[in-house]
Length: 560
Image (cartoon, rainbow, N blue to C red):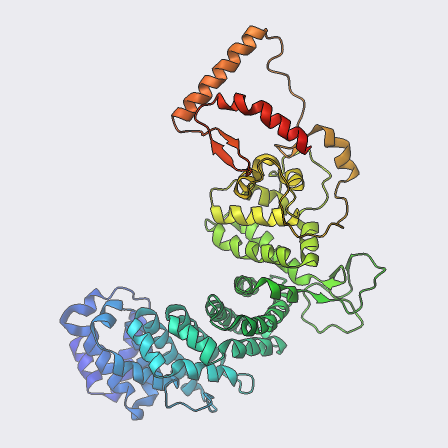
């Protein structure tokens, strides 16, 4: 922008303001580097000129263009840090109608398109300022912006706002709560924000237009992000928070059922954010993810598909059962979680951030399996069905069990530990059953961590003992050839010592000892024994293995 244009803006030359701003906004729509604006104080002069126009109510016809310019200028973090913008921030809060002088109930009056556009552009500018500056965040809180946003949220069910305003309200609320800890505390404790947000989400799900509108799905995603930040460190008393969490879990269940088809990118995003939020819900509340089937017949099979299509958005008559019934419970939401896990596993092949894709859903599945017997039974049926073909190693294949077994040997600790925890819980923390499904080699890391490398039974594991026998006829026929270390049937191999004399065998054994000792000295491997606590203890010399072998064999015989 040249000096002549800047002077016309400063003089509020109404005949040229619109053209000057239109050219500037079009030229700099994608501008991120503002070095040229730092010479001759150009950024600050333009900033003051624009706000001079915004403060003039007679020039309201160009306010939307002015705010577009402000939005571009607020990308410059350096200028925001080196200039005082407190007065200008107050102007933006006023234009967005979220300052202390806004309506007591926060509700917006009937808006025409021009007014809605000005409010939306002001909210965009505020989002940039809140993201860039801690001072701006604190001023927003001093101006009670958080209070107005929550009140506006509370009136959303009775007053229909433009989707753009709802979206940027949520965006601003997320930035304030994510970046300012005091905002999270005030929203949760003083403003009872979680209750308002849960009710808002419940009302949205009751609206039949929500499923068809991508704009509404974007708003729901932003709200779920706010709820995630607020529940990450709950400040309410445990009892009060649990009551809120029970209601919230029920609403999230309905959300999973509504968008569980995962047919569009936005539906997948909604389910992803819902799963992230579920990671913050206490285990005792997750039973709300399943409901008792209203027409489940005790004499029917434990799992049956019903006449209602999976994931339907239409209300279901009371006479029909749920889409998926297991042990007289509607487990459709768990099926959605597993579908999301499968989608994440497929995406993992092309994405580097597998931890971000998979750890939330694995966390929720672990919490579900640990907290509720029916959920554990259903997840075990889907992830660890009875073994039939054990000719391949458990980590080979594309079933959920195969993927999780591959995770057991990953260097990524979070995924590895979550996969191990989930599989171990589904095996009811029974070491023998874990070996059968994963192989001792894959599960050795978990066993070492839990102190059960010697296959001892875990004390205090609280699981029912009435589960059915998981050994199929096919498995029993191959059980004698089953290699517990590999987790599969090992094909017969030629004995490498066949045809050797005793002297040759002894020579090869000594060579092996020397090689292992060299690996130990070089720090490549660390031989160990299993101590009384079932955990590995390092050895000083490889020959200590031979000294302890008779005692270990005797102890193993006692256990078996």
